[in-house]
Length: 249
Image: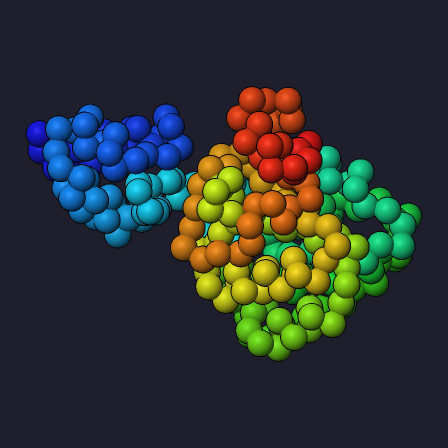
């Protein structure tokens, strides 16, 4: 079997199972585990999967630049944003991270809702500037141009000053075993601080991001209070997260 054929089989298996194991692939492809390990490394180097101990999991699908993400899966994100509004109450202190789902929530906030919003997102701060009853606290720092958010030590130290009621966390990748991960180290550091500074963490994740992983660790899956998705919460694919004690909606 040609190497390119093995690659396609590995990717096909990953697409169906959301995780592949060295031993199973070794048997399926009739090659040694060392050969499979090298194949997975090469596919990981091409950005086609995420290598983990004993096998591989998918990368998060979709673009990483903010401008491209605004247009991607917009209908699904609208569903997530509408579901999230039920968790926001008058008087709360809420951290909005820089994801596009959080941006849609900011656009949908009822005009009479009274919140204090802490964010490092330029687009979200710009939208909420027009909301009469929302106080906005903006975290300074260095601009991450791909995401239009601030990062760095100044940003992290700013978020450490608060104990927010809720953190609205945009999800790039979430895996029941590997936790929440992201593609940028410094942005993942900021997200971790947001989580540490919040009583509850609401994860905003289209279903295609479940079971995927990126390079930089953010938090364990169990730290999430709620996962809001674009599908009905009763789906069997969510059972693995319910078993961790996470509410899904």
